[in-house]
Length: 450
Image (cartoon, rainbow, N blue to C red; front, side, top):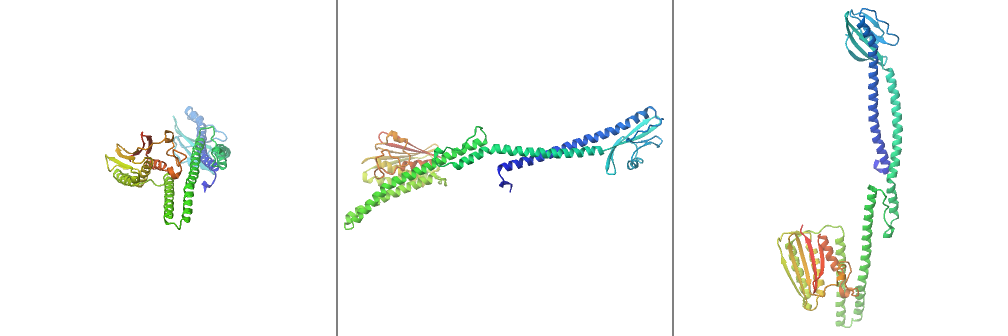
């Protein structure tokens, strides 16, 4: 229920509650200390009432004691047992007549009031004298009552002032948060909108604003990437769809010519295959960039099996152009495990080999090296093609990027192959490096061991 209130209210109420507990403990300690002081004062006064009579008995034990005066409560019993002075109230008197003299102090009650009674024993030449003096604690009780009222009123005033101060301080402390909230309501996806205000003080709120601004920046970049991806995908899909539509329209005109119709259908199938590959790569990139489950780890032996299958597929692909595809494998521990699933590794290698076969000329060669060195897995794919412009290497892993902007998806691929390779390697905590080998291109994939 308390959590439904605003932070300002919770801070104020919590502060007042803590202050109330502290005040109550402090006030009780102060009252107890004052009560002890007043009780000691009454005891001291009672002892003072006895002092003059004790001194007189020590000087003249046989003399008659003087009247103690009005308001002095005294009870003196001589060595012969006779009472020489008795100004005690009746209820206290009855407690003293049967009491043996001693150096003592006790409290007696009379008509709802308390008296502190002090007893002393004096040894004289005439024998043992017993004396008692009493002092009423009514004045002390009155002082305590006045003190209680003063402390309670003072505590209420202090708590009210403390509550107001807590409210004002909480309001001042939370003012930057309110400014951040209002600014957040006005923010849009446009980076030019800026971010949340960061105050001059390097406190927790400023740190929160800095962290949220970094989060907003990442969200905006992600949204911008998604928008760019959709725009690029739409652009890339437009050309093959237009080609496919043209091919289908031409096929309609060739219904009477079986050979021409077959040619158009085969061309349309190639366009569909290209579209399917593009859609598959886009979906795979989207999956890798999402926060889904990580792939199951694979052993080096399992990855070698996928390597051989990919090489076989590449050799079939290169038959028509007489492209030679070779490989070598070197292992230190076949059971070593890597955070790279077999499906992802197969897709990564298929993309690299397909790109290399497309890049080399008639009778070219592609060579794959698969090594396990120390705690790393190193895959290299090298071809003897024309390589890649040096200025393009830094952009090669971007989506839909091609070294020659004039080439279309129908002549130079979709530009997603290397982007997908980089995403698969990153998902396995690895990296991809490109370099011109002169001749050809050298692609190196490095995956750390788990």
